[in-house]
Structure formats: C-alpha cells, structure tokens
Length: 176
Image 1 (spheres, rainbow, N blue to C red):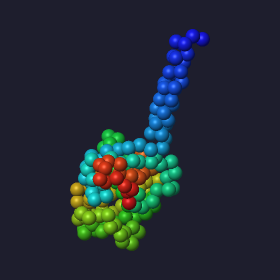
Image 2 (image 1 turned 30 degrees about the horizontal axis):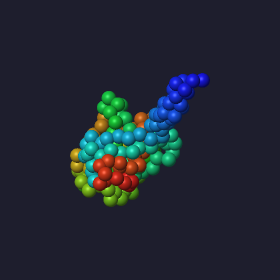
Image 3 (image 1 turned 90 degrees about the vertical axis):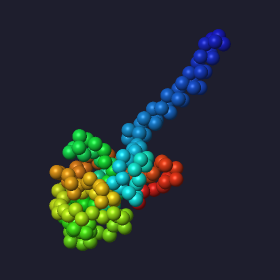
Image 4 (image 1 turned 180 degrees about the vertical axis):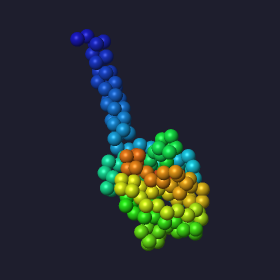
C-alpha cells in the first residue's frame, strides 16, 4: 500500500465511519426512544408556556399512563395535528366538569393545583376502554376534549410522555 491510499483509508475509518455511526444512533434514538416538540399555544400555561421546546419519551406500555401525565398525541379530528395535554380521565372512568371548572372522577373531586385559569365549560364523559380524556391546564383558553366532537383519545394515537422543558434556557426542567 502506498502512502496516498493509506491516508484515504485512515480518513474513512477516523472520520466518515464515526460520523455515520453517530448519525445512525441519533436517528434510532429519535425514532424509538425520544423526540422533541415545540408547543404552539398557551393551552398548558403555567406548566408549559407557548413556544417551549419539550423532550418527549415514546410510550410503548400504555398501562404505564396515569392521571396527571402530560402527553403528546395526534388528533384524528384535527387532521392528525399534534397536541400536548394532561391526562384527566382513564379508560372506564366517568368524568364530570361543573360550571366552576371543578373536575370529578367517578363522583370524587380531582385536586388540580396546576390549573390556574379554570373555565365554566361543563362536561360529562364516560371514557371507553382503550381511550383517554385530555384537558389543557389553561382551561380558560384550551381547545381540549370539552370542545371536540370525539373527546376521547385512542391509546394508539398517543406518541409520548413529556419529560423535560429544554428551551428556553430559563425554563429548563422536569414537567410535573
């Protein structure tokens, strides 16, 4: 082997292969483990602000979803638009919302310290198996299940659970 072909070989193994492998790893992580999303509205204020960038973990075990989780899902009603909302109702539950904005699960009041702007929009929901009821934290402006023709989100439409705010820098932290 001459010096010129040895240099090309070293360049490939020292630069091209590691960069290619790193790129492949990033694609696989994004496809199967985590992704990021930018929030376009203020429907989750104060938990999530408009234009926050969030780190979301993909959900594979739907039994792990619990009330209070902030999820990313697609809406079949809105041309597969992506939404970020909080799980309020689980499969098989009955959810009632009164004219003061209080939420009741199977007749018991739900404590929601994260709701700072309630809405008088009432509702009664009997959640089918395999479906979830999602509401925004900023109920005053949130276009959520209370307004949809089909208020229930199928588990297959859930894309992930919000874990962290990653931007802006002054809001970095976990989502509660």
